[in-house]
Image 1 (tube, helix red, strand yellow):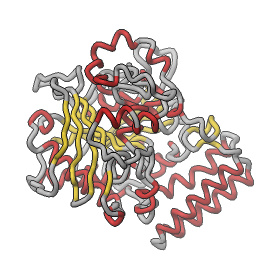
Image 2 (cartoon, helix red, strand yellow):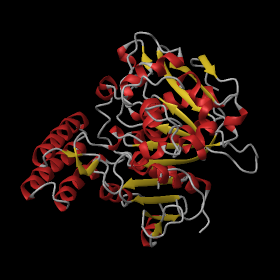
Image 3 (tube, helix red, strand yellow):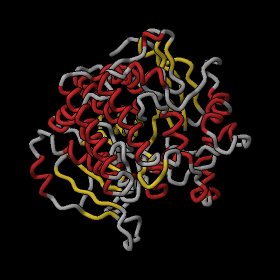
Image 4 (cartoon, helix red, strand yellow):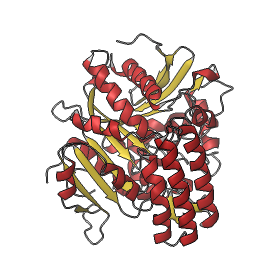
Amino acid sequence: MKRSVAQMVILCLIVSCTIGEIKAVRSNSDGSEAWGYVEVRPKAHMFWWHYKSPYRVEDPSKPWPIILWLQGGPGASGVGIGNFQEVGPLDTFLKPRNSTWLKKADLLFVDSPVGAGYSFVEEKELYVKSDEEAAKDLTTLLQQLFNKNQILNHSPLYIVAESYGGKIAVKLGLSVINAVQSGKLKLHLGGVVLGDSWISPEDFVFSWGPLLNYVSRLDYNGMDLSNSLAEKIRKQLKNGEYVEATETWMELESIISLHSNSVDFYNFMLDSGMDPLSLTTSEETKKENRILKKYSRYLNDLRSANNVDEGDLDTLMNGVIKKKLKIIPKDLVWGNNSGNVFSAMQADFMRPTIEGVDELLAKGIDVTIYNGQLDVICSTSGTEAWVRKLKWEGLQEFKKIEREPLYCENDRTRTRGFTKSFKNLHFYWILGAGHFIPAFHGQAARPKEGRGW
């Protein structure tokens, strides 16, 4: 089966605005990486970090994709988590990551919404309150980065999101389309990729009780309590009580934790606190000597920074990385998730975005969905439920298609996932993975052409 560029990119998972200006940009002499701030609104500063892949193909007949990575939360740091713990060139020990997605694409990490990670606002009233506002800020950033850079605006951009980032990705995709059509943005949108994404909170909370009961993490009493609170959330959403629904969601998570002996919401095979982002990448670093030359350009002055505390991300981001970047405000303390951002968006947190996915599909945009088998918070069954609510004209045919098995490299002794596609909708079931699929699958989790991963 011939695969589109979008599908080849996602196989890594087994896959004129005048507001503000780019300032304080720093790049290597060979152009391999650059970073900076964009003032997306007065006194609202968004941080970005672009890695140009050493594998980049400059042949215009072979378009080289750019992945814009959107972290979840809302308020989690893509520059920190997505970069150093999932798909970037270096891990939290500053060792080369053999499974980096740079082998198939350039990477653009952002700390979005403003207030996450290294991004900041000068006044608390400037935090965004909705996914639409977050998407508008990101569109402003893309205008500043892409409009005057022919290498960027001639390359297909894939918006790849994880968790809550998926809600923002849908809104951003629609915002990008409008900006391109109006002539305000020079960019080719290759597709939107939704990884374990919080698209329909109602469908997810209703999936939790039955899923955890089926895998023996909840008994029937616990499942009944879970279902009861999920029903309360459904009524609140129907009445437009979104803040109240968020509060009930918090209560529901607490009830499930109590009755499951603290199941990890990112992987039902684990207890809370055992998620993969706390694990090392020792297996990957065994091959580091072979790839060090290709990634040595990203090491810069970090090469000798061996004083990182056991790969601790907070120590890394507030220490040697902050020192390397040079432009981060001295009084800014990096955090992996901003409570201020989450609080500001509390009224939008439980609002569904299924209609936005429908709109992207209707406009012909490639939409790729992938889900980890072991995820709870954005469970596969919850994702399948909201997909079945799409009004997209191709849905019935999509549902009829049989899935194809996926294998890792040339090893066909173990099924690693399943996939099926119809027109511009693609779905990947990733076996053995939880919420943070790249952190689980390592070598398997990067772009690869052909049938397998």
